[in-house]
Length: 319
Image 1 (tube, helix red, strand yellow):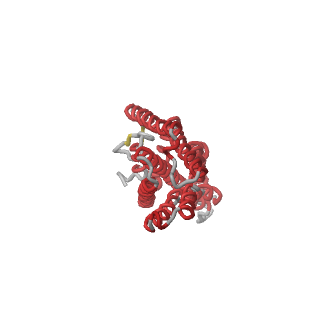
Image 2 (cartoon, one colour; image 1 turned 120 degrees about the vertical axis):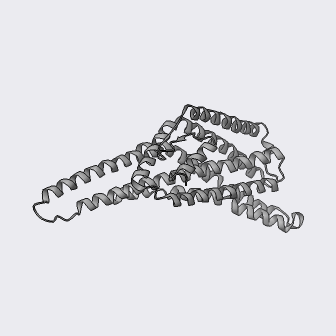
């Protein structure tokens, strides 16, 4: 990772896609802030993305027939076109949401990075790097699968490029948010586990003799109160900041993943029951089936990551 900061690579990725611009303090790697230049770049990134997305959506409304796959039936094409339109809207809403809540996001990131650096000593660097590598790998799978699928469908060049780019970009955006959220929850869960363990150790500390009983009790009480205060801070961050900021995005992403999943079965059913093997060749049939199987792997991985983020709740219950 960069300068011992576990989440630096994620924040740099947010900056690269124009979602959130932040500046790191080189001397204090856990500190992040937004300069005037960062604010300007955020507005520019938001404007350019919104312009591109809504131009693609406008073309979909004006010329929906150019986005229809020749292999699909009328029902399949209707579902496919609606799904593409929903993806455009979700991307637009995510960018608008991040822009509207950028100050709260920066505050949450700064708070978690500070405690991660001071108390956990960036102990999750390798694990978070593995998550990021997995995210990059899934994004590459998306790009290859979607480009091959839409090229195989014999679409015109402009719809083919738009569909490939939007589908790949949607997963790149969604996957980054999901994995970043997962990393933040793991840090909070680790902090809660640390405070729970320290409180338990303070409470169960054996008393040597009656002379030191009062001193030991006072020390135990002070330690317990301090850890309870910090633990309460973490719970407030989880409930009032992290969940309130990421909650709407996770809900949108879950709905989009659920809606996009049937696109591949539609395609597979069409390939198997409608195409003539002698006419298009066995190689093309296998390529189409491979595309169908690979289509939903990134989305399924995203849903699994979403549903596994209950580790904070487990730490709260274990206290």
